[in-house]
Length: 438
Image 1 (cartoon, rainbow, N blue to C red):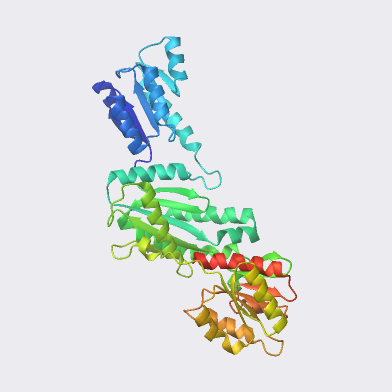
Image 2: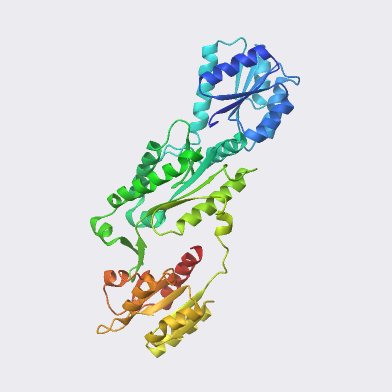
């Protein structure tokens, strides 16, 4: 998997072979070049974690170190200088030129091994997330780049916890950290020493494996996550299947329980020339998996291109207002238009589905009805059960002060009357943005 890569710049065949063998015995992938120019080309292609430079190269040791440091500034590898010179000024010049350590030759094999391992250990520890103990995005992208260069039967999995930020907002950072750590442990248990597991961001994981195992890993993870997810909720929230996000004292947003979505791409069907292109395809495949309700995964196939499957749609900022009170109906429509929304308003519940079909709103501000006839609740339930309209966001404005009753209809936000216009349109903007990301 090329998780640890060291470049050796050394013209001497015997000693470079010896150093390469010692490194490989420590589980490190070692490559040898005899000139600085060849080494620089390797730097760009593989971004090695360490460069070992011998004073046998044609240019002076300090100049070689300076050149390597300057040309590898973005990847910042460890630079180890090897020299037969024991002169203090030579050491100082080389260290000032950018070397991280200066080892005098001949050097004992065990000491060489110990020093290299110590440097690499500190290097990788500096890129470890303290909460998950996983390598961060810099290491993950570097290793992904190397995997693409190997041109073997690889597969990459992008794994995310859906609605994680909402969970964190309600249950707190400690509970959110526990969820991530538990999922991390589950993922780790599904992998072996030939796989790579790291982060792209907090709660967003990257697995690099082979295409034969990829779907089996994804299938196990979605099953395992759904098995344990209820344990992170109160019994009440777990039983009702959603939680209520309280944006202020007068509103409650319906948030489904967290799930996990996994996008998979591989080198089996497509050749990638850059890690940027591969990551872009990986995110598109994840987005396609995310469109499915609950946990699930999708693997990009020759006939299913994620880039083509995620169609760019025009931003929809249409709001349909269904409010029997004529004064409030007009006020809401006028205010929505002043806020920049494309608004339409009706007072008759019976015209709901006809208007929804013709207008295609992203959001409906729906009156629940009276205590005697909660017509709006029935309409919300029908909309959410419809394959054509289930993604439309619904704000239920109501005189019925029962959040669970309202949210159980499938409404996305409970907003009791009376409310302030600034409040309802603040929520409208958030919900419309959510709609446009689906």
